[in-house]
Length: 146
Ligand code: HEM
Image (cartoon, rainbow, N blue to C red; front, top):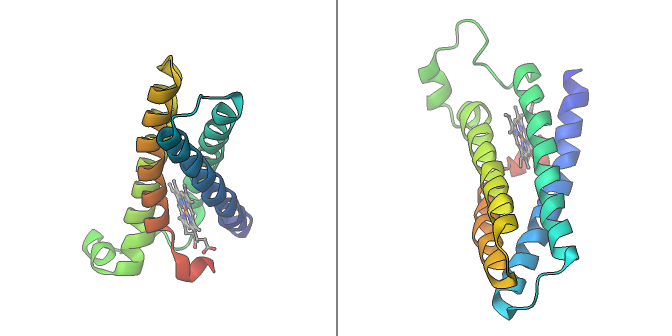
């Protein structure tokens, strides 16, 4: 069970990085070139939202089954988790920052939907999606992933 969730989370992450990267590039290009907002722009921002939300659900399950998560293991004090960079990454930094990244995508997506014209739609997406992308790229455990 733990391995299945781990592999799912690990492989789904490729899709998340790819789609969030594409949605970010699309939003920035749209904002810079001031072109009009098209259905494909809506679809790509929505797809980024869906992919990250699925990864959130998989991540939450993984959090409770992974042996790297030691919050629930008896005899591991919080100060030991916080003073070890690997334990701190998996137990605190990665889940927290990824949740913040997904919240940024969710806020950006819902704010852009409420805007009525193209320029403000792209502007909102071009602020929130790049911030989320930076948080995601910063918190991926690259060495373990590749
Ligand atoms: C955009 C969202 C996320 C992305 C792109 C992402 C990506 C990754 C990647 C690439 C790994 C390393 C996998 C490997 O070693 O092959 C990983 C590990 C992990 N992630 Fe995430 N993650 C995300 C969100 C979350 C969330 C929200 C949680 C928990 C609430 C979470 C919990 C974990 C845990 C516990 C591990 C360690 C698994 C293990 O080695 O046993 N992730 N994640």
